[in-house]
Length: 214
Length: 228
Image (cartoon, rainbow over all chains, first blue to last red; front, side, top):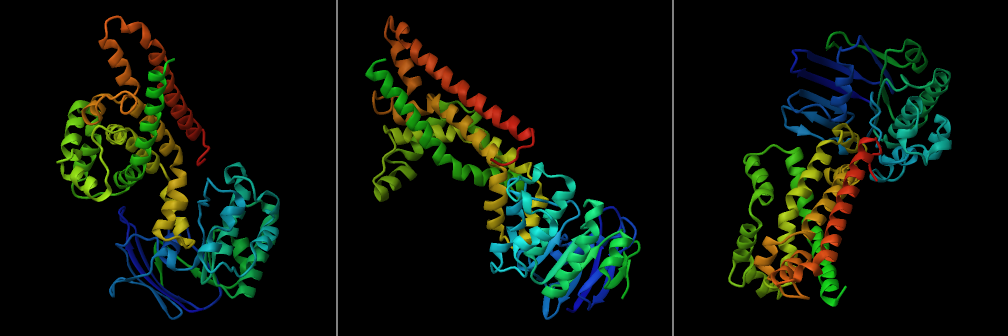
């Protein structure tokens, strides 16, 4: 993978994100204090950042966004799997339907079978339950599974294990590392959790008050 | 109950059902537009949509008559191309009821759509849903409680439609005479008051039922059971 990222974004409250970096590793961990703009970087990669941002994003040979050239690939054509900080599970669907949501809309073929993902995430027992009836940890595991099953080109994981039960974290971190290595789908993980960062390994990107240099 | 009563009840249900079918599609589209988009002239659309709520139904009916009459702009066109005649026809009564009930449907649906967490729609987009896909798989199911509540309200309102109906469809027993027209008709005859109580009761019962069901759906929604 080769990712070139450049983004300048002024928030309405005066905060400025000014990020310019390149990534080549399949696993990258982004760290930095709260409110430093980590999530904004993921949103820009996902295509969910307001169009007022000046951005230039290139993933391998594909230009995802170039505000000067007027190029912007919409989120549904970016083929990414995203685990949002606040889960964003679909309340009208079951856990299993949430997990498989990205499956049909892509090529129907995920890098790993949804059943396998359910097994590794420990959610095999409750696919048919509405997500509202699950605990916070279970919900986050479903959200992570949805990102993994939906990912084709890139995975963006925002504090993916923050609500997951402590005793499961080491196991899930190991699964993530395995998945990235076996599928070749790169992952960018935002986290505060030093323990998780250590387990994931890979490259490290530190952001401080909206600024990331290369 | 005599044949006259049964005819009126059956016709009323038929007219109200067709009215809801007619208004649902445009109603959802307008509700979505009003809930989600800012555009030039939005206030005008908002006003036009809600106008039938406050305008005298007879005026609404007269305007519809002008529009859909045999010499009207739309009426002539419908008759020429589809052989469809709305004046003095139960289908005309359904159009009148649809227009009058439209704002009630749009209001309920608009509130439901405005209440959806847009983050969920974004999440669906990142998983490969096109804007239409997001609409049909996320927006529509998550606003279904409002759409159903709106349909029930509109259905109840359509059942009670009188002014606009009599203007465009007339008052023909067995053809365009709905429950309210039936009651009105009977009360014109001296001593006819005694015969209308069954119909009054049925009218009240159906309306109350629709409101209760609508409220129940609303509370179910507030209790956190999203979707249906």
